[in-house]
Length: 351
Ligand code: KG4
Ligand code: ZN
Image (tube, rainbow, N blue to C red; front, side, top):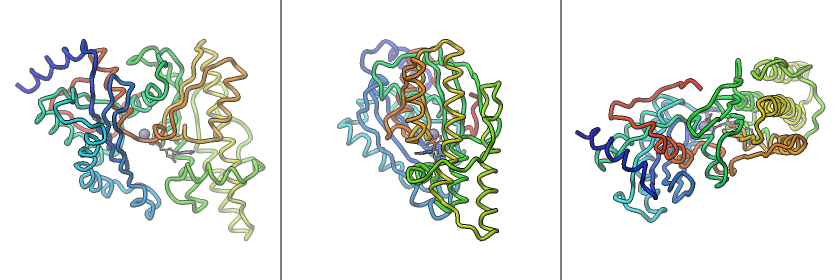
């Protein structure tokens, strides 16, 4: 019975002028709930970060992440409604990240979303975390519409996608080993900079010189695929060698050199793909898009090549539920994503 009503409501919403979606995101170490109107206007976006809790372990501990989502989620929900100045009856649909991510962490959000959808008698929309990261740009740039080329750079994914329309994309290239964010985190770890690594590497690099050559050339020059494990291993070996020889390590120089080589690979392939496919817009998505050097390099290169560059507002670069609500709206418009109460979490979702 529930699902029959949900289907009917979902179809009606596709024609409605104002649609308010409440979305839940719990794929890693951020418990976030947001309400977004028509995929573009953020009414509230509450993010309860667990970074301080995981810091002491040098990375996210899945079991601890799940437990903290459980403790945080009810209050985050209440705050999201309060901040938006709305009550439960103003919400049109519930959306939730069902993958990719840590299964135990995702399950907290998925079960909370199912309970809400059932008790409020609202349609439930299942959203891919990756599509959410792309949608962060629809919230930042009100005028942005597909088609465009997308450089996806998160902790779990690094890829180039040709986005033809809101819900249709093709994979142009992907990492064959580590994701870019993963490499930033590992480099930070060997340097003792703690978790999460990306922001620390970014910060230290500002004081350093790009004077250490870790790899001799950009890997896989004839393809749009990426490889970061060679660069990552070269940095780790360099640091360990210097330590063994009792030599001092310049953390800022290692950060600046690593960051420059990682960004060069990302920028050259993203620009190359954008040009090859004749796209005029390059959209960047995922946590690594917060990197200041990458931003600078991309702006320069896009300028030189007549490409318009789109990068999310800093607060929308990393995990948040507003981007999930936005992606859900564009799915709804295309009649996609409606889920019944058997929805479960997925560790991976093919790009
Ligand atoms: O997209 P995200 O929040 O989570 C995933 O979906 O994976 O990305 C997290 C990643 C982490 O690896 C983090 O170190 C990286 O984004 N990151 C950065 C910066 N801020 C976050 N990497 C480089 N520079 C930054 N400023
Ligand atoms: Zn993410």
